[in-house]
Image (cartoon, rainbow, N blue to C red; front, side):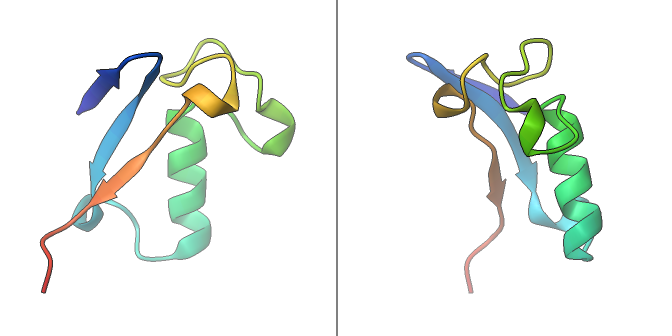
Length: 64
């Protein structure tokens, strides 16, 4: 799901839908924001904004 609030926007992921391996999870999250690494921080064609301060990702799950 994608949510927008003010100038910030970004995708929300259910934790259970993401890989448990941290490196694979990072790759999925970076791909969702249309970047492959830190050098792509000014991406403009993914789900994030053109500035890292306005690009957010949330991973949600039920609490214990």
